[in-house]
Every structure is written in C-alpha cells, then in structure tokens.
Image: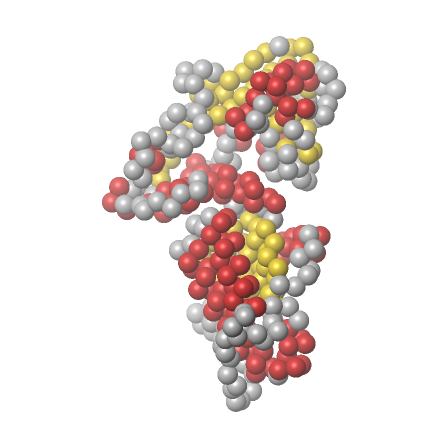
Amino acid sequence: MRRVRLFKESKGPPEPPQLNQSGQDTLTGVLSRGVWERADPMWWRPGALVALLNVDRMIQFNAARGHLMGDHALRLIGSLLAIYSDEAGSQAHTFRIGGNEFAVVWHDATVESATSAVERVRATVEGTGLSLTVRIAVSIIREGETPQRVLIRFDGFMHEAGISRRNSVYTDPELSLSTLTIRDALLSCLCGQPWPEGPLLDALALSPALDVLDVGARDGRLLRLLRAQEHAGRLEGLDPVGGEGVRSGMAHALPYPDASFDVVLFVRALAHTGWPDTALREARRVLRPGGRLVVVAHGPEHLRATWRALGNADAPVKAAPEGMGIDVRLPVSVTGQDARALAQSSGGEQAVQEQRFPVRDTLHLTIQQQTL
C-alpha cells in the first residue's frame, strides 16, 4: 500500500478544543459539540441519517507521536469527514463531539451515499501508514431522540455488534427500512401529523378494547401511537427484522394460534410479503369471528404532482385499485428541497428544477377492509 504523507511537524503548544463565534471547533474547523447539542430543527430531524466516528487508540497515538501530531490527525479526519460527507449530500453537518469523536447528520443523503462516504474516510485514514484507524457507525435519528440519546444508543449497538474492533464501518440493521422511514418523517412534517399512522388510525376509529396485530410493523410506530392513545387491547407487531416491541416473523407463517385477534393490519406491507395470498389466509386464520382484516396502500394520487414536476409521469408507488375501500387524502405543499429529499429516499438522484416548485400535492391512502 502506498503511504501518503499527510502530516507535518508543527511547533508550538497543542490547540485545545474551543468554540469560536461561528460555532466551529477551533482545532478541526468542523462544528462543535455545543452546536450538536442544540439540535437545531433545521438539520436535527427524525429519519435523518447520522454517523458517529471514533478514532481508535488515540491515547496511544498521542503517547507515541506526541500531542501536536495527534492534533494534526484530528484536523485531517475532521476535514476528510466534512469533504466526503458533503459529497454524499448537499446538506451535511459535521461535528467534533469529543476529543476523538466526530458525528455527521444528513437529511438529504441516501443510505448508500452516506455509507460510501464514511467508508472512504475509513480507507483514507488507514492508507496514511500512521497506524491510525477509525471505527464508524451509521444509523438514523429516531422520533423524539435527543443528540445525547443518539450517542448512548450508538455506544450500545456498536459494542453489541462487535464494532468495538478497530478499523470498521457498521450499518445499523434498521437502515434496511430507513428509506421509507426518512420519507415518512418528511411527509409527517409536511402534513403536520405522523404519516401514515395518524390519518390511518383516525379513519379506522378502532375500539380501544380490540386486540390488534400489525403485520409488517417495521419499528412499531403504529403500535406506539395506539398505546399513546391509551389503547387497552392487546397490541402485537410482526416484522422480518423484529426489534423493540416487535416480534420477528414472516407474514406467510404467523406465529399465533387461531382466532387470536380482532384486527389484523397490513400497512403498505402486503405487496412486499412475497406470498400475499398465503399472508391473507394466515391473517384470516388468526382473526376471531367478526374480526377486521385491513390492507392499506398508497393511493394513485399520492404525491402525483410532485413526481410529475420531477419529470415522472407517475409516482413510484404500488397503488391500490382506485375507488375501493376508504380513501384518505391530505393536502400538502412540496418545495424543491422537499422533492429532492423524496426522490433520494426513493433511491433516485434526480435534478430538481426549482422554478417548478412549490407544488400543491396530495398524500393519499387507500384502505381496504374485510369483516369475517
């Protein structure tokens, strides 16, 4: 491996981490921990991608090379992280949050571009030949999380996943669902309520005594919203990934006895089960007599105006047949920045013609129900 000389000796005392008037860390030039902790809503948003970088063996490096060289190393890493993060998304914010810790927040990057950016940082640091490496984890900001809670969660899953080994990049398994999570977080901001759970539950008007199964529950947000509404019945969530409050399992083989629930929900999930007919048979099996089977999908009007303004004839959604069941429509105004983030969360990198925005658009759900 070719060794690159990226450091040079410097004279004078080491620079202590300080905050200047612009909110920058004076050693590295990136944003400071103070700015990170303020969690400005302009960039601290649920569903935004976040990465945490820890420089391995910094104490040993300082002991062997000296604190001046250590300061140069931190400057380099801060610069690399800022440069590569900006390439991953136009709205990246890079922070130094501790002596040898950095963080980045994006709300317009894809999972792939963010992961690629931090991998480039890891590989570049390794290639310096200075026996200095970094470990990095990538996840998302969850609903209601503070910066401090994010740091605590990162510390936990980094060690649980074995990221304590040096020179590694770890991607949170939750990111397998994060593109939808990012899109839902943005749409929630646009419509002023949790999307799609808020309007869906309003339309269903479930009795609080009913036992409910959410198939394809993802992170369990719908169930948490029901609990917040003081739903007294049994609440179960099932998802292939599983997680806190959500059981791991598959829709075509529900791990429940016959006649276990009053309501079974498939919220934008049936089309992704792989065996939809079998999943529906299983849902009917676990429903009690008189129970409700509910299948929810995006309707054909969902973000139609936005996608057309982006140059697409139709929205890239699996819409339910028009005119069936209950239709829920919410009006929204979509800016060019919003449209760019929506396109990226759908896996696209489309150019946005700002003169076409804002547009008045519609969030559309189609709810199909069957009573046994």
